[in-house]
Amino acid sequence: MPSPDIADSSTRAPEVPAAVDVREVEHVYGRGPGAVTALGPVSLTVPEGAFLVLVGASGCGKSTLLRLIAGFERPTSGSVRIGGVEPVPGKGAGVVFQQPRLFPWKTVGGNVELALRYAGVPRQQRPRRVPELLERVGLHDVADRRIWQISGGQQQRVAMARALAGDDPLLLLDEPFAALDALTRERLQEDLRQVSAETGRTSVFVTHSVEEAVFLGSRVVVLTRRPGRVALDIDLGLPRTGLGPDELRALPEYASLRAEIGHAVRAAA
Amino acid sequence: MTSPVSLRPDPAAEPGTPRTATAGEGSPPASAAPGAGALRYRRLGVRLLSIAVLLVLWQLAASAMRNPSFIPSPRAVWDQLLLTSTVHDGIRGYSGHLLVEHLGLSLRRILVGSVLGVVAGLALGVVMGTVPWIRVVVEPLVTFVRALPPLAYFSLLIIWFGIDETPKLWLLTIAALPPVAVATASAVYAAPAGLVEAARALGATRWDVTRDVVLPNALPEIFTGVRLAVGIAYSSVVAAETINGVPGIGGMVRDAQRYLQTDVVVLGLFAIGLSGLLIDAVLRVAENKLIPWRGRA
Image (cartoon, rainbow over all chains, first blue to last red; front, top):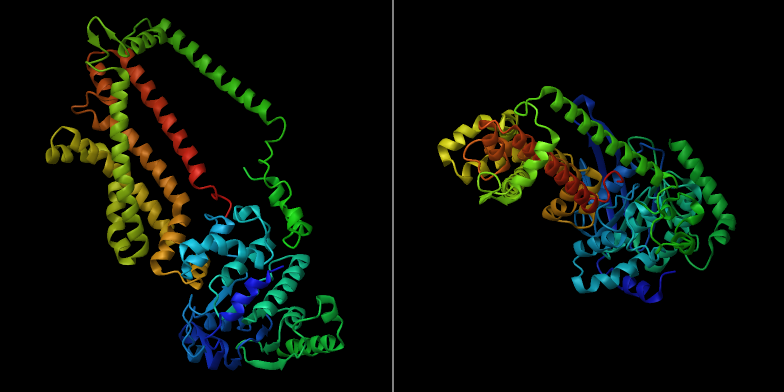
């Protein structure tokens, strides 16, 4: 359980408008006759504090869209803006990938410490912040462990702690739980929902799981198959706080939303 | 050795329940499986036995040959060990230097040459791995030098630098450089895109990525290059000491050959071989300490 004072410090953090603005974006891989249009044209705006989930079959360009928002790639046409500026990797957005991508030459704590250093946190403050961040994602007493000494689920938690280290207004997650076993995945989903509710951070989450989308999202966007376009854009309107995971799943709206989105995903694929 | 406690993929021991996952965490890793100790002793026994058999064969060959200039007996070599390690009749060791002094000076040359070669190879490798056109220009040259036997360019070094320490150190440096440069360049070039991207997503600068991702990731391969380089420097030192090599173990062997002191030659071979094994063992231990993630990531 994250302690309240940590949650406080991060709700204060986003002073810049965190909105994501995707306008008429199209993305093409390759050139000439072999070129593949992976995405678009797509337009989207994510208001501050929203938890947007991008759903679609594999190969629909949802990961491409996330990479464009992260600034790893530039769109072939159209524009992407984060808080009004062009995205640059490492500025304004924390990213969690499908694989944990931790550095095996560092300990668990060392990985988080490095993220704090890159985020410009002064050296003296880091030893205090490392355990804070790890506890925020539900990890205790693992700071001195080696990466290969913790489970896959724990590794992905460390990756989340690392992405939160920068206190960026935006959190981007690219199928972060897809490689985990069902039980671990469910636990991480529940904890992410909690962390997200506490920090109120704007998030874009990519998944191919309809269940995951309805459980985590405040808004769900379904993409068509390649080149991905918006097939469905829906505000879920489910309560974000105050309900346990089982209570949330038991809501009648939950089931109908899941059916509707599931139908849209199948129709779009 | 990893603690078996932490490696279980059991979802029940997963993060949400840290208490089960961390149980027994402070305790040292469990020792190897029972029976491993016995196996180890048996292996040691076989090794000692094979050494004893070789000694006996050696003794038999020496007795059959009856020519100590061709095959000296183990006893004669042992006596030379004592003679070259002491001051006797006012003579200090062999050619005025004790065996350990000969060996020590050779090892010092290897150390200096290897360190210079490794440092230069590392720098060159990083540049080659990061700047494509430098790689294109320099790689054929490095491969060319690597293919040359060190003795081949030693003559040139003698002409340039005389017959004292300088050409010897140059020889070892040049011999040690290529393997490190090649290993470093290929490992730096093949830096894992996923980790580099993760670092960039955290706000790492170009230099941060090189220092914190590319170089540590290349370390296992660099270390293999270093071991190779030390081995090459080791085999080159004897060549380097063929000219004005006393004191030095190679010089000692060469002098002994001139005077047909075969027992000293054999003693020198033992000194070289055993210290080589020792150095490789030290490098292996250093590797395990420095690169604990090798083979795990």
